[in-house]
Image 1 (cartoon, rainbow, N blue to C red):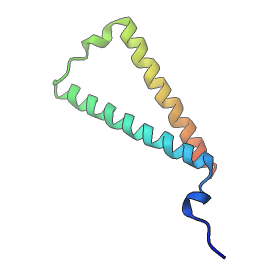
Image 2 (cartoon, one colour):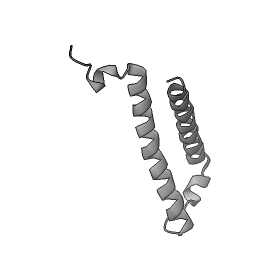
Image 3 (cartoon, one colour):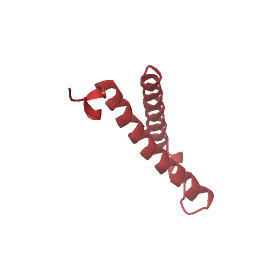
Image 4 (cartoon, helix red, strand yellow):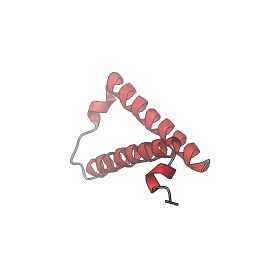
Amino acid sequence: MPSALPTERIGKLARSAVAIGGFLIAVGMILLSAVVLNVMSFIDTTAFTNEAYLLMLTSALLLVGVLDIIGGLILSRR
């Protein structure tokens, strides 16, 4: 009796959790790099004082936080 391949045992929910996790890792690396560059004064963040850019940045960070919670809930159910 042949055993199931590892990819056959992984459900769709787990695959989506892995995809969300990979996306969040990439976004986290970008944000950490931006913070380090800002602390070292290589980039100027005064452009984000414009209300439109501030709203866009806040919305993006909120979306990343929601995806992080969804990924955590998916992984906690396994």
